[in-house]
Amino acid sequence: MNLLELKPLTAAYLSAALELDQLCFGGLWTRSGYERELDSPNSQLLILEAHRGEEESGLDRQSSPVLTQNLLKPELETVPSVPNLVVGLGCFWSILEEAHITILAVHPNYQRQGLGKLLLYALLLQARKRLLEWATLEVKPSNQAALSLYHKFGFTEVGRRRRYYKDTGEDALILWRGGLQKLEFEETLATYYHEIEQNLTFWGWQWSDTSKEQMMTSKPLSSE
Figure 1 (tube, one colour):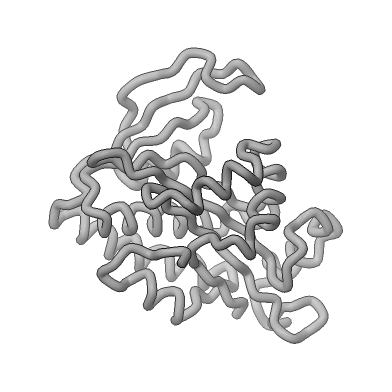
Figure 2 (cartoon, rainbow, N blue to C red):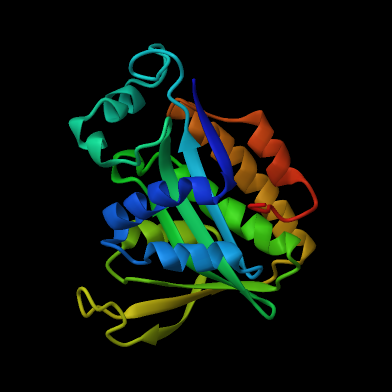
């Protein structure tokens, strides 16, 4: 198994976040932009860090062959230059009673392995801990993988922003998910949790007990 740690973004990982941002979005935010987010009490930033371990490849050779092949790809020369790999990044803003999800990114070599689902689960869990009532986000209509994920988590389309994405001129769908403080949402999160654990195990990941325990505490995570 290969260890996966979910934790708040800190200044030590800013360069890693910037590289992943560039890889996934072509440079959505600048370093100063991320620094402002870190300083804002209304921002929640999370990263997923894959631990390499002690072997040359950083992997348990008995783990998922797909994951092993991905981590050994030459393209990984472009990933963050930290001892371990930052493979995911998520952010939301707390605006009154709303969690506005601004970033959900998974390194291209690790997509479709349940990491995006884990990040979205974590963001919604943190939004619930902040006593927020609903979540919103924008997504490209052409991004079917993201739409499928959001729909699975109960998001529905409530509007459209015309020509929102400057790189392609594509519209943005506005998605909304309410009821974050209701009991049924807590039960839904519990269901997601078990599905995520099974999916991660299938792909050779193990969510670290330490970050799992921190995620499950009653207080929102903090980068301090």
